[in-house]
Image (spheres, one colour):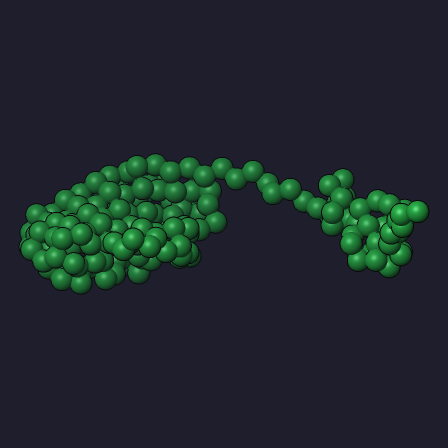
Length: 171
């Protein structure tokens, strides 16, 4: 006759099964030890856009609206610059005098685009500055406010190469 394997009590416990045949608490959806993630509501608002047509390496935009002050407000700035030198990326940026995280920057010919972000809890306007690795002919920014997120993390970033690396950047 064929043999039937019946696991011993200890083996069943190792597999997350109780001796009575029920799942262990960490596998049991009815258990109070298993918590479903709470619903998160993330909102973002497009606030303003500015341009500067001067030839420069650093651009500064004064009194830019950054939204309503909040302990969870993340200010996101998209940047696009063109002209003068090719291959330049965003070296650094500030929002209200504090260093912003450059989440991504890419150059294609004389065009450069990027994103920077910072948790800014106070104020309704700020000076936003962007510095490039070399001179540009003009620069424009768009400013967004995001609330409800625990941070601004880039889960993927495109590059100029065929390979598309996945990376994360916490703000």
